[in-house]
Amino acid sequence: MAVGGGRDEGYDDGLLRDRPADPLRGTWVDDQMQFALARVDALTRELEHVETALRSQSEEVSRLHDSLGVVEGRTVRHEVGQEQTREVRQEIAELEERLAQEAALRRDLAGQVDRFRGRDAENQQELFRALQVIASRLDEIDGRASAEALRQRHLTEEIAEVDQDSESVEQRLQALERRIAAEYEGNRHLGTEVARLASSVTGLLAAIDTVEARTRAISADQHRIAEDIATLRSVRDHEGELRE
Image 1 (cartoon, rainbow, N blue to C red):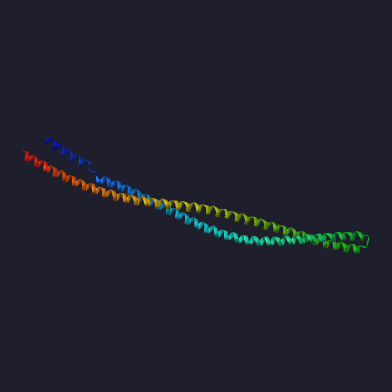
Image 2 (image 1 turned 60 degrees about the vertical axis):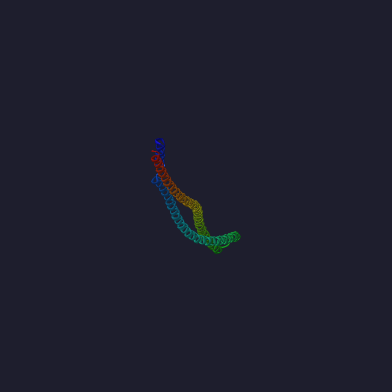
């Protein structure tokens, strides 16, 4: 009887030692929940940062579109300048034709001078005055041609400047559109990560419920076993008293 009594007491002590510590298990679950919630908060802040950057870039796109409107206005002026250039070129062509006509007239007059050489001084003076008028007209035409050439050069430089500005704005727009596309792609991946983490948190909560249910079941089993042990001890003590 003494040996049997020692084995039952050891078994009872073992059950008490093997009983899980509920506060420790609760601390681990709380740590996991805190980690998951902190991760969700971090991803949410990162998503807000990305959205702020996208709004800033959208404002920059709007400003660039305004700049493009200004450039388009300059392009209209550029087209007007091209029309003026065509008119200037046409006028220069007309002046060149008139120069050719005046040169032909000069040759004719030179021939007349040769033919009428030897005439009296009055005729020679008239011819000289005519040549002076022609020379003056030629000088005037040459001056107008130089002025028109200078004007055409200024128009050409302005056209080149407008073309360069248009290319610069177009390149900036293309680069910004590529950046926006990359930001939207990163935002999409971030949303997927947030959804995945939310699903993991849901699974973790379900696992916590399962652990709590199992803990309650184990506690009930331990309580029942303790009652059975107490009953067995009572029966054993009663048998011992009867045998004595």
